[in-house]
Image 1 (cartoon, helix red, strand yellow):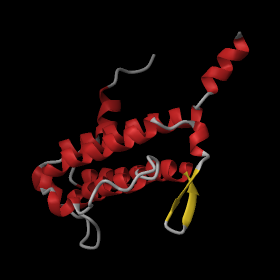
Image 2: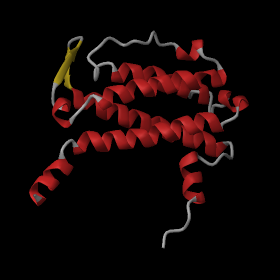
Image 3: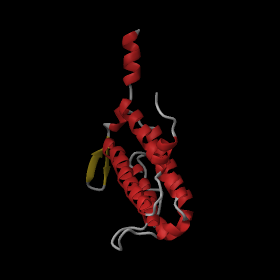
Image 4: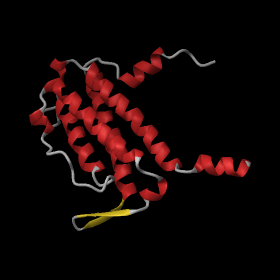
Length: 168
């Protein structure tokens, strides 16, 4: 009985962990998008980098591009979110892109991650796309944190930790 409990808990541990981490990044990115004022959406720390808005639009487009192989379908987005959704109008598009990826991850299990898919001339395991989604989202959430800090805004994750009751 105990052996079964351990085996059941370990089943799909990779996908469960991946989904949990993505849930956290999704929350942080969407809360960041809400928290930053519309006036600060055009903010760029330097002229060479994307604005806050451009980062959110990039995440939106990339989510579809990264998650469509996980669903074994063509990218359903035409891209160019930056041009289609100005300012805070990008938030619903960003949320929809995360919903799309949530659906892809919900249909995944550890065994499926080992499967491969060919895109163009390249064949990769589905795990590549799942991990790329995680690292890409983490990378750009880090950018958003920097932008917020430069504007004197406390990132949502930090704010939640600061408001949490002290651990005993």
